Length: 421
Ligand code: EPZ
Image (cartoon, rainbow, N blue to C red):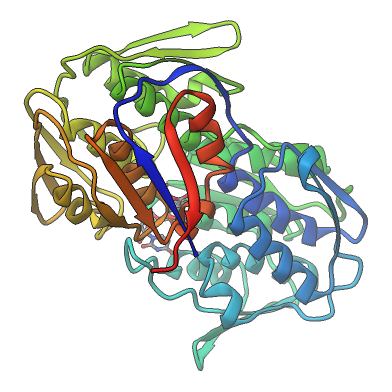
């Protein structure tokens, strides 16, 4: 296993190019199961979660050609020999459940390991299954697997109790071949959902309303192969925005969709940073003292839960009191205990964190627990006095492409080393 070692105190100066979005690539890869010819994705980042899904697609019988350096990925699900997702794979990446919808739509059945919980919460898929059942699928759960079967899926009006992102994507994927119109109400409005809808429409699907809370999918008989460019990763972009603001840096974040970063920009400006739109992207300039700001995480277009840990790192060294409410996941404060070992002053009460800014953090040996928590520890290390070591960074590698290289190029004193601990 590797760990990342940081000597804190450097300002980040320069420019960084954002990679393709992990949470957009995964549903696009699942969409390739809908057709039997070669599909092509570009701007694909090199991430562990994408490697995991490649293994799963190959397990099912898909062929994969890739040019990782060029960000290109080709997938052909010519013959799906095994419409299944085994426990060994799903347990490492719960987003594997995204194959459910396309498998039922194409193969009329799927057997997928229930994902179980993860570090940040129970992460149920009851809404995914409720929607498939309403569309006519038969659902059986036994031995930790869900088997979904349907001779024909029919269009339905489906209300989602919570605007689940992968639930919206799964049901969109299931509905493209269904008889009639499916209406998803209280649908997720994330940019990754819009990216998937755009890709499916380019294949010949008939989807309207993506990006709003009501998405309509009219079933079609056949689709063309997918050829799509992955949107930039708004969470990676937001992470670098916070990194610049925290280190009194001056960083141009290139290749980002500025509209997708609005709430992050608003909160960073409230905290005293300069956030300016430029032709090539967003420039973030950090100023001290950092002002404490309150925020709550919400489904898009609210403040993203995937940016909560990173923003908390910044609030740890702000000049006042910040109240953070995590409304999406029930256990997304795993980073707090590690930040407190660096000297942060944080009190948790259920889903609320009260962060009292301190003058400075001190470097420490830390352990990552989940993807975004590990990013927050890296950010804290950038401003901490002395050396910070973050172990178990396989969590980080799930969602950030070469983050230490990108931070090094911006002036951070950071390196990846073998962790023999
Ligand atoms: C997606 O997860 C993202 N993952 C997550 O990113 C992100 O944090 C999350 O959306 C929220 O924005 C991918 O897109 C691959 P949800 P997802 O279903 O779809 C409840 C990262 O760091 N819910 O929108 O699994 C659920 O418990 C990851 O990149 C149900 O109750 O999240 C949660 O409270 C972490 N029943 C809320 O909805 C369901 O059937 C939102 O979950 C589904 C969800």
